[in-house]
Image 1 (cartoon, rainbow, N blue to C red):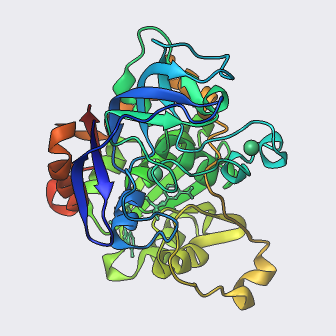
Image 2 (spheres, rainbow, N blue to C red):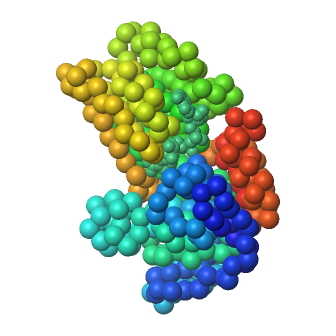
Image 3 (cartoon, rainbow, N blue to C red):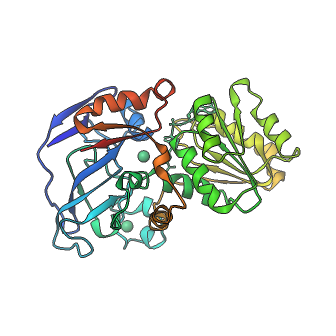
Length: 345
Ligand SMILES: NC(=O)c1ccc[n+]([C@@H]2O[C@H](COP(=O)([O-])OP(=O)(O)OC[C@H]3O[C@@H](n4cnc5c(N)ncnc54)[C@H](O)[C@@H]3O)[C@@H](O)[C@H]2O)c1
Ligand SMILES: [Zn+2]
Ligand SMILES: [Zn+2]
């Protein structure tokens, strides 16, 4: 089968690989129908993710059709259309029982990281019963690719941890796919203001179309002042950090108001300054989270009932044999205006 393989920092290639086989009773082999590329795949290609070794097939998102199942799989049969979660969970270990699938002792984020991933014609998915989700009849499968990772991430790490509430004020720093996923799902709770902050005017324009009440280009270094001015001098109730660099975590500390929450979503590669000297008396909470994908079934229902339309995040479409072009388009988002690219296997 064809697969996109990580070959070491800066290197990737389309290779012919043997079709995966069942290795454990809980495994399923899924024929990929559609997959996509995540910002995290670009982090891997930069050499930022030490757990991902050269030779790994990348990809942790996608939808497909079950080809075969191990003897222990009871919830799925060959022919079933499934959504593949970016997080594999056994459903039985202590962390899984607490709903922290991201820390499953035999799962977590392993696909396209420590086991071969979804940017291929077939993938082996461990713990299939609890890591795949049935796709309802007639669903838009392309839309559901957005549910493997980015919508649960924006929702769980940003909106839920940030306790977005009716009438509250929200600032989202970073209008990439994750920030925009937080923007779409924050609207479940009807906050009064959602202020979107980025350096890219095209993405800020999309944010306005997606429901942001205000957008700020932070290039001039005055974003915190502007947010204060927009919130009667108070600052926001929820500041969602969806970039992952020190400057944006600092900005969140500057624009959160008393009693507010900084919900960090971004993957940080270096340490950041924490201004506890200013924050200690402001009743500020700071949260962090690796996405658990516990909200995937709920998000699926909101897509089915058309409360949420994730297809708005899809900008480009490719075939699997054009995946190198897809990576190039995705990596040059400022020029290509790419958000999520769909790759059809
Ligand atoms: N916590 C988790 O489980 C989890 C899961 C998936 C992704 N992530 C992380 O979420 C973050 C966002 O992901 P994405 O795919 O949307 O990334 P992305 O790179 O597509 O988007 C980041 C956005 O931030 C903007 N930006 C960069 N520097 C900025 C600055 N100084 N000020 C304001 N805006 C700035 C960019 O213009 C871009 O629009 C990444 O760090 C990613 O690794 C976390
Ligand atoms: Zn991802
Ligand atoms: Zn587990």
